[in-house]
Image 1 (cartoon, rainbow, N blue to C red):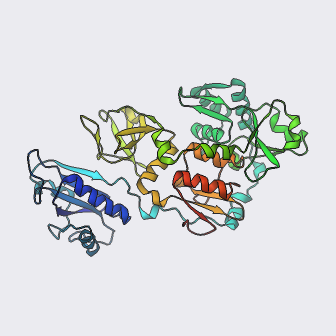
Image 2: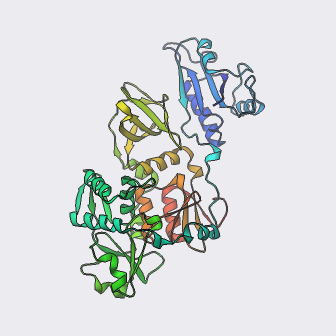
Image 3: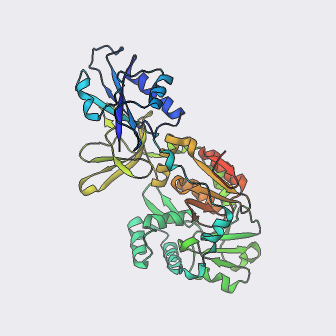
Length: 446
């Protein structure tokens, strides 16, 4: 990384100037250019007027840019937000401390930094879908171990996650792309399993028949399952057993309503996706209602922050006597031997730590930092919804997408394709999450 700094003399308090810089970077989408600011924290009793406080705006230079003088574009940016340069020279990090009146120089990262290159590619066309994922032969995948897992879970009714992981290991269901946590998520998405947050255990959902959003005359089974359910297609002419994309879960068993008499004690659940969607909160309300981590200590271990792709060591967040000083974002804390102790979303404004499934926390952090780049696209011919893999939705919202059809998403050239969601449900859920919505092929544009 080729990072240099521009020295800026300021007037006003540190907080006022940081917010001034932050708001312009956010409004002009320049966080990839100016990811950080270093500053001198004035000693108590000293005035904070001009000449007393220095800010050093960090610039990530391109490989072909020089390191001596501030480029013209950066000088113009400072003029637009009402700042001037103290010196035309670009500084290295080691040059900053000797320039300040105190030895205390701190750093603040702009927590909405996501590079332009990380914007997802345009969604694939219907023809591309049919040539790749849609054209695979499902019959070559043996998904019977997933059926055995679901039988066992149904017989148990509820249990601990350690028991769940042991059953997965015995059935040899794990692979390079499917972990125990991923299998559990798929079972929840399909309506077979419930995750009990209050005691960190699982329970099997009641056996039911779900109506798809766009197919009123056909339904699919969800919840508990018996050993003979997967062979319904053999005994009932109108039933159909279909393997999930990639064999990543128990089969989808579909049957019309007039064939339901073949199953005992089967409750109709109706359009579960729409029912769930109607109760889902907005994203801010969802975050506010999450369980909280009570004042975690940042000492004695390694703090890391998720930067949109990977976990990186973080020194911008600091613990104080009354709370924390630093940017909002998704953090995790590692103890001895890099053992994960906790991971949580930090809300700087409210000084709160929130906990949820990791996918949900990543989405919430991304929404806080670059919410204007969140996009989904509806494919009109199929009524499928395409969501960028890097923007996968929180579990509860994704469950509504999956229950719309009973199909897990398929990976499609950087996107997750959710079958037969329909425009009305897709728009409703996108609105709940504050996500941009588009129809048709091409880049995700509203």
